[in-house]
Length: 466
Image (cartoon, rainbow, N blue to C red; front, side, top):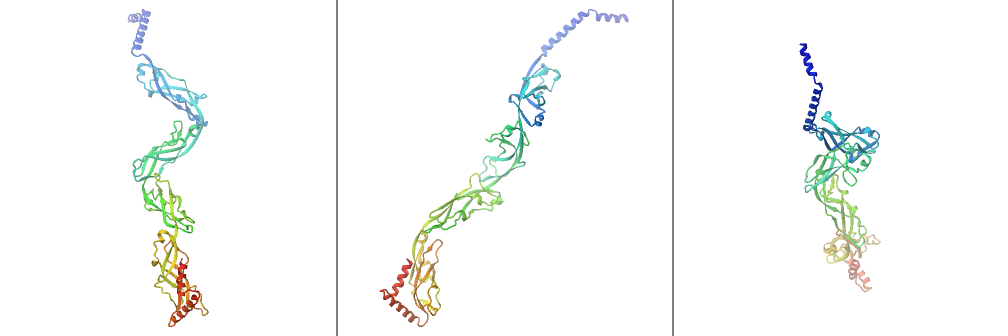
């Protein structure tokens, strides 16, 4: 037994050098085979994004930072066996910078693989450092505005718009924050006829209306819920009036025109249903002293009822109102005495004129179309004799007197002062005698001057009428 064991050992240890050489050759052969079947190779992965670690260190110092454009990605080369490399993808390669290692404006780039890290012989970035821009940290907040675009269905307008959160806060490099002019959400209303409710991204815009790159910013909201009301559009007329009196010899025709005569308004149904027209108060159009048409411009929006608005798509709110003013012309009307109501005559007296055939001439003035259409036979008025003087007995002495005539005229027509001459006599049995005596005395007195009383009465009436 002992001899057998010794024999085995002797065989194992015999020719030890030759056996070591054989072992070495076998290993080399294995390496050769492996190098052919599974060689070590280099594989590059391009555009690997560089992530930032411990960025809050800069924020605590009141500083903002941003990687240079050329430092935002890096190419990473991995050295490993072909079998390992074949199992790797870009998703397994990570690149990062740790801001605690910042030196000036450079920070080392660190790379690693999330898979087969123990079988990778080396992994290196194409550049050792990333360049960092550093500036003061700034923050601001902006009201979120709603912008609409697109064409609504015919007969509709965009109403009120609201957002669930109306403020967005931003923080980041001062140069970026200061370039922001406002925040908006843009709603497409094409073809809509009813309320819109949706969630949309918030856009930060510069003063030119271009979008600001927010990659370096910390933004409190990136989207928001939006509501936009869609209202019906209604066309309504505009009416105007005027105040004041034109210059002497001129009159308003009563016509006020509006340009545009119709406007488009919109609003909630409850408000829109209450308005059918817009009337502008007379105080807006003053024709005092005018010698021709008077025009003024107003903003009609000031006179719209609460909850009703101009359709902004087609109206700017300006309306021109024009009051028509024309020169007046005189016309003499021949008004029968029978059309006049007598006032101021004592009960025991009467008029001796033949009022059924006599007329009084009255000059009136007004717009040509109005006064030329007047017919004295259709005009009524009052003959006031209350100014006739009384005698010693407190009554009127029978005779010929002048009374003031006031006609009932259409609006816009005025009369010049007019008088009518009448023969006043006493009622009763002796009325004729008294009237005759008085008329005779009057006739004798006037004949003394070469004219009879009856002619004088008619002449004076005509003269005063002119």
